[in-house]
Image (cartoon, rainbow, N blue to C red):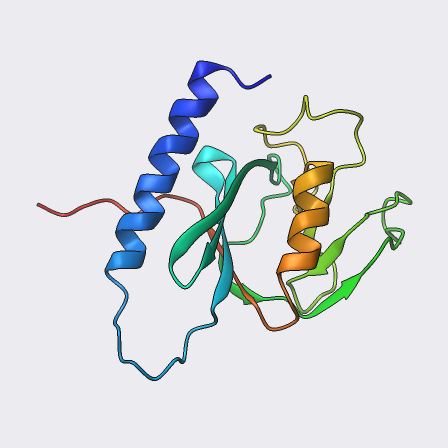
Length: 157
């Protein structure tokens, strides 16, 4: 069950991404991927964009203190259906690797339920709920852009 605070946090995250996407240059060359994922760490939210428009939105769990999720622009390097983490010995269904080290990616949370989504509890990965993980695995392809932002863009007056 999503509480009102979480809904407000998600709403403002969507506004921030929509606003920043509208500032992107439109050169007409089609350089930008048509599908991308944007993780807003401050809001513990992921927004999926297709051609700059929201396609999906969900809560995530990113890195806790000492295991911060790296920020920046990445791309999906490879996908695995259900690998086991060599570091932690847990299965990571719907794995989408985004970091050259092979140790950071998007995957389904291995914790039961979605009680931990919306909080920073991972070892650096972006944990997703089961439905979102399955959907994103099918929706994003190798080469898709994944942006991880610590703070949402703010308007300058």
